Length: 298
Image 1 (tube, helix red, strand yellow):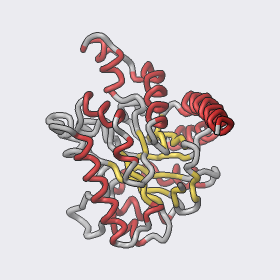
Image 2 (cartoon, rainbow, N blue to C red; image 1 turned 90 degrees about the vertical axis):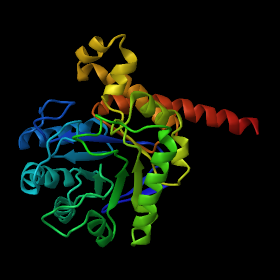
Image 3 (cartoon, rainbow, N blue to C red; image 1 turned 120 degrees about the vertical axis):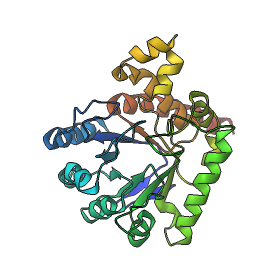
């Protein structure tokens, strides 16, 4: 399987690590440590050195309760960083849901649009739609994510019931619609949206039953890095969860990434690139040995 993007056809026969670059002052995960242009550019370079196969640049936090930005402010944060990242030799994804931002970063050479809204967001000020931007581009990749409600409200009243078939149907509908309007299937990736309007139990159900999403035939991107659900299952009390620093979620994050890959994910979106890359090398060595053993027994 390959993921077609603007400049690259990404070979997904081995799992790929997408490194997160938050050009934000209010990210839940890194507290604005890469908010300046210089810091964000340097972080892009570090993640590539650490082994990131893809860079994912975002200028607006989508944590629960986050305040939305206008298009001009978001572009002001990310454009110079995107242009720099495009020069580093790896595919560049931009985490945005605004059509005007999508158009600008694709014009600047970005390869992938990674949209938490699944191209559903519309602006009161513009008739431009995200699906039109993506469909109008000849090759760009797109990642469609499932989000219940919106960042300001998604964790106030999360989803109910068995989320796996609900998420599966939602993503299938979005992907089929994109194909209908002219976006070829190899350009499409799907993301179950861990933490976006789901309970802890629902998030882990999506991980345990991830193959039900893989069966749709699109690459699955898993975004577990530093999510609060990891703190919830590794700490013994609510107060301990609240005290757990996001930097201390690295080991659970790597574990979740490995399980996601084992369950069929093609891409893992992570903050801790170096650690995840090393862990996946161990996983790959074990898989290669297992395949060799099976081959010799036939």
